[in-house]
Amino acid sequence: MAKVEQNLNISALELAAKNAYNNAYAPYSNFFVGAAALTKNGNIVSGCNVENASYGLTVCAERNCIAQAVINGEQQFQTLVIYTEQEKLTPPCGACRQVIAEFLDQSAIVTAVNHLDQQISWTVKQLLPDAFTPKDLE
Ligand SMILES: [Zn+2]
Image (cartoon, rainbow, N blue to C red; front, side, top):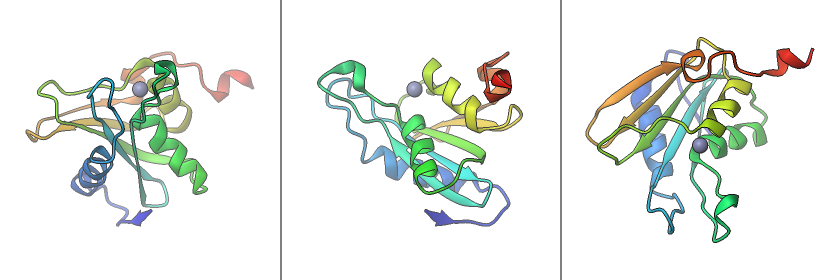
């Protein structure tokens, strides 16, 4: 994990997401995705999509990114960036929205970027209103 200053640095996250994108394993869809998140401790973690010949076992970049952080002992995040080289910016899928809502605050920002330097951002609450979260199990 790379350590960064506490102030948000989207370009560092973009670079980490792009590097992860370059390692994506997507031979079936050819839809390559990289993701990077800034943890509350100021570390950057990243992930890419990993497909499988048994298609249902495919795991998205966002979920692999969050899992990578958890593996390294981090469970709290400031923000998450998704990188693709699609002309239409790529939002997280429904499964990833649920996992994002588990680990990022409702007010945290998720940003999709692409190779054309376009970007769009959402809050977690916008991505998954009325999310089922750990609080619902209390
Ligand atoms: Zn997904």
